[in-house]
Length: 627
Image (cartoon, rainbow, N blue to C red; front, side, top):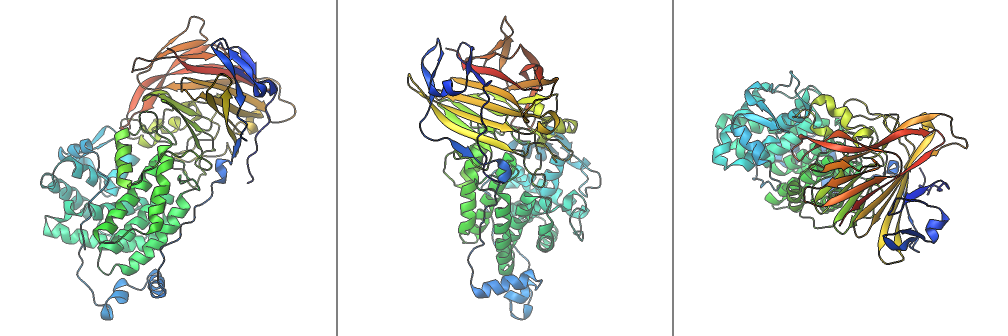
């Protein structure tokens, strides 16, 4: 796919001035047109050339080579990959060595203390939903919700338990759950997919957590210690043969991280370590795009990748080794894109199934990574444009949804945005599809991935990209054109202008959706315009329903103006913003937002809707902070 080119603006394009009078956005705008009574200056284009950004469908794989090794080590790795036992390659006459852990890992990424306390009280706590330990089918025959499956069979609960109290108070709980799980899963199946316990993702995560949290489960009962060490060895060998059959890229990375950890921490591990490092380098290169963002465009997967590598570094450290430079570089590569999706409060935005992960959790993860950096700004492939304007943060999705083979919770969110100011969320997306199965019902998962659950325009209540079951997505947006530039004010100051368009509605309605956002660099004003542009020379006759939705952040109180062409927004910090529309009356409807714990919070949304000609149309709006 070639470079995206800037689409020509039709003469009908308009942008609102401060007093909400229509101002043409053609040549007159570029030469300087008065903004309105509040501003003596005019917006003019910065003489620097605009930046044309390639579409997200063109995501390229980053190439990370495995660590450099000698010729002899290369032979060992090849022999191990071909099935020669590690003992034959590392000990005289293949003499077996005692199975044991060679070192203890210090976990750098702490778990959730509240969830750990719930475990000590006798139940799993996942996204607000309690499940008694005694009622869990550890064999996996009775299916439970996906979030609970990941916690139970991935043993991610070990980190939560560790964070809740000293080991003396938690080891007995960990040993009891581990014993029940081992009794229910005596032998690995011949191939992956035989129940949730034996997907590559859950298996790799489980083995990795056994290594990282070994003192919790290996320090007491001798019989359990023997059985669990044998399970570690069996699971590592199972992953050796099945890791390439992973369900997605992150699951494969989990499997390879576990193999590398096994090579570091189990006896006769050098062949497995060489094998695992090469496989992990390849898997990371296939997981991540040129900007360092995972190809799934999912911030939760980005966080998991950072956590895996941070814990893997701890495994190297405890064996007095340095983590290979390629993995350190990848870790540094992963952090800036994640920070680009944080809002003014430091918490995560609601994109591609993610919920509003708290600022503390983000900060803890970044501290564990050891990476000190700024949010990604030069965005080309990650697909999220970020504008920081003093106390205001704007995040704009300007890429197609991920390809089906990468998507976990693919959302039809193209051209949606989030806006925050001074730590207060003003405009959000609903988010949280990945948490469905906790307090959020599973039946809402698809609805939360729909276009209408995001702050953007919909036509005829249809998704811009088809939303399928099990996190999959179908056809729809395949091309996004983006143009970002800096505008200067004649009276002083600047603004950032981002124009993007997508073709998600072209097949059904012969219309492209184009959105223009202009954020003043003082952070006090966001102007927007949504345009529907015919894709052919002649637009179709008739009309189609449209709706432009602005989901409001939690705690925002809203009231309509007397003319119903705007609304006042009172934020929890006491500040006041005004919303105005030039495209029709504004309505207030119920909405929801999924919070830092994955729980639904009742909120409201502003909706501008009506009928638009198949020949196209334009709709202007404004968010402005009032003194």
